[in-house]
Length: 155
Image (tube, rainbow, N blue to C red; front, side):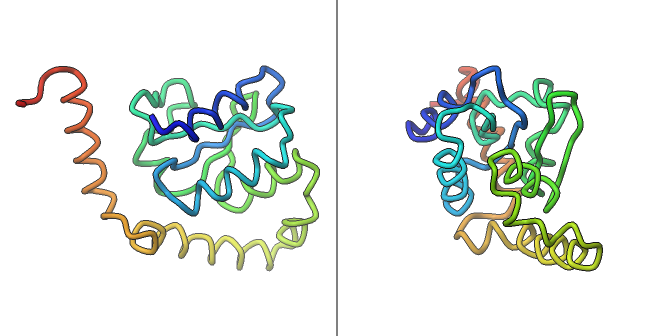
């Protein structure tokens, strides 16, 4: 586990969380956003950050959102189990942190649709834009890594 990722999660595990944000800890741009959100959270634990790239990520603990689904788009989970995706997820997280004005304009229907359309393009291009392999390759490598951690791999 990446030490900076581990520290981010440990600092956000307080029981007072208002929203749980699933993020890709292997994505450099995602990590930049996560560090920004952590700074804005100021140790209050309002946003619980969950790294889906961790080997021990368990979809059952996160409303059944499996790794592949989580990699496809941003997900936020409310304490009551409500799942938010795309711009709505970002908007809610920013509202919780007192920065709702950043995404406020996306509440307008036409602006929200345009913002979600732009986000969907980003979500599809995120891996190649950050120099990473395609999702199928990442999943295959992840499965192989899990097998090795279970002492099933050939060394």
